[in-house]
Image (cartoon, rainbow, N blue to C red; front, side, top):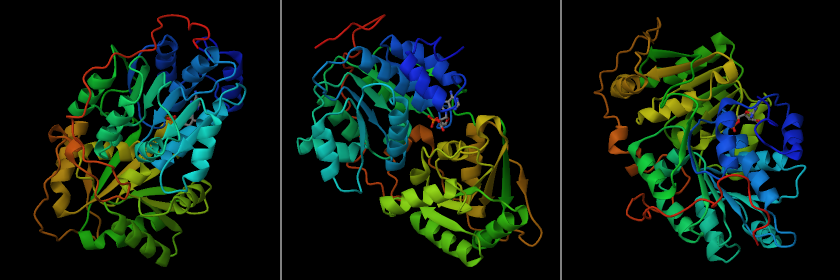
Length: 432
Ligand code: AMP
């Protein structure tokens, strides 16, 4: 199967070939034909599967084929939970649209809105945005959703976790009812299914991996270690293993800063990435980590979400997440593209219930090891894990700084809206 076989135009095929892609990834192979037909999609796909090209390429093709010769209203909107993911998706959109006459831009909070407003006013076909800033800009009349024909919700599960549901519904309420909706999510809780049923119309389900499964080539390792020994233990692992590129997860921003400082003191190059850091600092940390000028990136769950860091050999959970699904997201960063990866968790007595919840979700016992000199002595009782069935939806990530605009709640969820671009086979020409 080639990109051409999927029905993509020569200009788009040329752009992906220039990126060095030789064949479509499984999600692209499954999703692109349905999206080209104008169908709604509910896709289970993590970052690293090629999902961004999976939705961008067919949407670009549609936009090109139905473009108005003079008028350039906003016709496709991609919503993402984090600024990093928005920037990343937009980089991809720009690259794939290199040989077509489609304009795109990205908007997110934490940076000056004025240039964003100017670009929007000059006319864009496709916009990538985080919900909060997008609504602010809409309030300021910098853009209109009246001509939106395709809505893409990327990492919808994380948007729910971050409490963006009300914002999403508000944005949708400004759009025409007749549109195509594409929803991507790494995990499928009942809350996600509920959100999907309110937005998608007769969606085609596209799955590339079993639900909530972890990448196959990931080895899980648990080290039982006392809470106050974790920093020392992490330094030992990094130094003795001679590790050069490690993503370390902490549960809080403060924890991320503290660990980063200690790593630097131990002569290990490191940077923290979390919601309290400025956008510039976050972008710089990510760039330095990707190009190898720093070895360790210490991140909170939200900040790390959706980061495209290929072929990461090690992911360390300095603390286990209290929501088991977050473990799946975290380790999605290792063992990618067929390469083997190691997911290492440092678990103290307080976290034993978190571990059993993760094991239940994975349906796999995680192998625990005790290392000489680090024998656990903690006797603190286990903290309660947040079970997904109760809804990660109800949880707001206070630990991070990506401020949700509103409390999550489902009442605002609109009843099943009619949607779909209203075409079933080949796109109709010029509909303006
Ligand atoms: P995504 O899951 O969209 O974040 O993509 C993960 C990575 O895979 C990105 O670096 C893409 O550039 C890359 N990628 C996407 N599609 C393909 C493909 N068909 N072949 C090889 N790499 C790809």
